Each structure stands twice: as structure tokens, then as C-alpha cells.
Image (cartoon, rainbow, N blue to C red; front, side):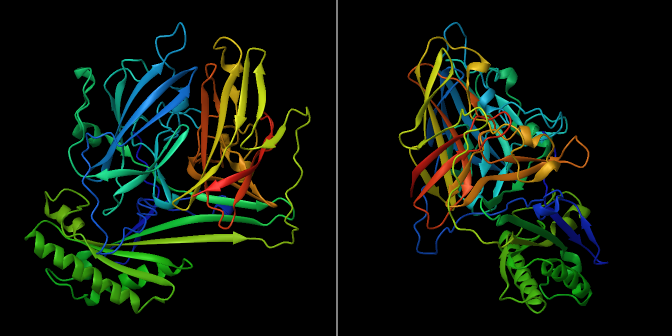
Length: 551
């Protein structure tokens, strides 16, 4: 598990010094490392006081099941709620093979591999790293936590290197969503589930081989990184070149409560003026957004007293910032958490002082755009130099053989609007041939060579795009949401990954259907779209047209 919270956080103390301790998202056009905010995006609108309370969900309950054809077999995934565990949360997944290739003991897991760190190599994915959490509206993606040796913060009831009919239980640790978030998206190979419940309670028992049952507390204590990374969107005009890069930016500033206030008081101390000036200056460097101002206390005193004090202190900071910022541009939202969310254990005077704090979290979005003229016409399809590419209506699709023994029908019946996103799925049904073949006979929907709009400084990302077709509406091409994984092993390069299947390669038995999924920003007003994999080195082009958008 690798320590990995890439947002900008600042601790403001008595000298009003800004000390960067975590990270956020910079403008991708600058070619710098994009930084993100833990908890970017938060929850969608939970409704007012009149909204009925959601029924409690038992952590042991299976809330969703999905089947995935992979490796010429099929597996079923039974998904449990995400259970909060302090600053972290745990996802429990039961996986079992429902169909195993002839002559094999189980189903291979390579479709579940994905990058959660760059500990070993920017070209080496971690087993099971493709299971990711997505914040509301696609504001941020949460990767499985890792230790300082790059291993997943995960445990399994049996050997996770193969999925057998006996099945196994897997548990993955992530950074917890913000307080008040009661559902979160889950990105799986082939599927996107937008509303997995987030609950309080006991994490389900692991079961299985008792020697594999590492205590959850021990597992969490070894975590080094729990990545929460802002998702970015990109679109461009294919005729004329309008380019839009959208960045969700997070800035966290932590204010020392002992500098702001006297003991047990919520009146701002005169010493705090420079600290507040510095905080307002940092926020003012952004073009606007929402600033959540949250008060925290130590555990001295009663719960109710601390809750009230934290709320009063948050309100006092809001009023002080309101005199320094344009509140028509920056929405200031006070909240108090009392002693419920300590930064560190309240086991010493020094730690208690750290827990007495007020945090400011700015969420802002930026777009950069170059205006040019365009006639809005979708360019003609390019089938590539070998004329292998195929253009067809998405719902009907087209047939293609990967070799003489493997024939598939490819289609995309519809796209789906969900929570400010577009979910796009391409299906590949095996309709003919014999045997399971090998890697070179598999379906290959990978994006191939230099795919990235981020230019030549994208490290291995250009070859690790996975399933990443673009959407066409008129002359505008929209690319999958992506996120900055980190600095590449290649000098002066950065690694980006997509909110999509990390691999577009797989094989199915005759009669079974493969699924590949990718997430995009919504295209308001569009009723249909085209999906295209343009010709790139290593990719076979295709275009699906007239795909209806549902939802």
C-alpha cells in the first residue's frame, strides 16, 4: 500500500507560513503534475429536511451482483456496502467462477489488474487495482490504498491469483468519502455502478483460510497511500481545433485553532489576522468556487459542548473570510464536526493541539478554451492504412474475426446518463469459432499507440490507455475522464490513467459477450452520439454511429 494523498493542503500557524503537506489539481495544459483533493466532489444533493431518511443497510447484505465474461470463462461479483473505518473505508466483494475454460482450474484475473501506484514501474499494473470508487458526478476517483512497498491494502479469503468455482472474498481499503456521503460510484471491469451504499458498522468477516485473515486494524495501520485524485475532462473540435480542458481543483488549508482562538472561545484572536489574510490570498488565486469551512476540536469536554464550539468557530472563520473575499464568487459554507474526526489520536497534548483546527476546502473548476470557427460536421471515418476499420450503426454493430477461429459481433446499443456522467459500453459477442485460443486471438479494443491529448510528456500512458474510445457529437470529440497517477519513471514525464477499463483485450466462449466500459463528462442537449477508436499505431479503428443516450 503506497502513501498517496495528492492534494494541496496547507497548515497555517503562528507565523502564517504555508507548509505544503498533501496535494491538488493544476492546469493540465501546463504539463505539471496535477494534484487532487481528498474528498473531491463529495456527495450529490442529499435533499433538505423533508427528504425521508434512507433505510439502514446491513454491511453483510449483498447490494449488487454483476456477471463478467472474461478469460473465456465467466465470473459473478457480489458487492457489499462500503463500510467506513475511520479515515478509511472497506469494500467487500465476493467473486466466484460460474464458467471455467475447458482444461483450466479457474478464470484468469488480468481484466482486474490496474495501476494504483507507480512503486514497481509505470508500465506494471497491480493485481485487482481496476476496482475503483468514483465520487459523485465524477469529481474524483479513489484508488485502493497501498503500503510503502506498493502492495494493495487488501485481504482475501483464498488465493486471489485465480477465480475458481469455490470463489473467494476480497476486501479493499480506500480513503473514506466525506461525512454525509451515503452512496459512491464503483468502477469495475465492464460495469459502472453509480450508487453503492456507504454505511457505518462492522466490516464483514473475511472467512476462508484463517492464515490469510490479517486483522483489519493491522492492515489499515500499514497503509502508506490512499489516493483520491481529481478527474479531468477534455474535448476538442476536429475541424478547427477548439480545445477544452476541464480540471476539478481542490485546495485544502488547515488553520491552527490555537492561533485563531483562545481556549474554549470562538472569538477570533488578534494574532489570527495574518493567518486569515494568507488563507484568503491562497483561495483568491482561484477563479471562484465553494469553500467548506469545518471546525474541529480535541476530546476534552463533552460531545455536545465540542460540537457546538466547532460550529461556532467555523461560523467565526466564515465571517472573517467574508470580509476578505467576494462572497458572490466564493460560497462559504460553515460546518462543525466536534471531536468526531481527529487528525491524530488524542493521546498527547501535542496531538490534541493538532486536532484543534479549522479546515478550509475550496472546490473549483477551471476550463481553458481556444476559440476557432468550425462548421460542426463530423469528419468522415478513416479506416486506417490497411483499410481494416469498420463504421456501423451502434445498436446493430458489425462482425469481425480476430483470427480464423474467433469471430465476434461488436455493438454499442446505447449510452447512459448518470450523475453528470456518460457511461459508454461496447459489447463483443463471440458468435463463431472453436477453442479458447490465446492472447493474440483475443478481442483487442485497446487504444494502441500515442493516444493522449496530453502530448509527448505522458510517459508510458500513451501505451497504457486501455479501452479509451472518443465520443463524437458533430465536430466535437470528447475523451474519457482521466487522472494523474504520478511522475513517470521516464524523466520529465507524467503518468495519466483513464476512468475506463484498463485493458481492452479479452476472450469469450461462443455465445458469451464481453463488456468494456468508459466514463465521460455528460454532453448536455445531445440525444445521440458516435463512438470512435481512430486509427493509432497498434489499434484497429472502428466507429459506431447513432447511439441513443438514455437517462
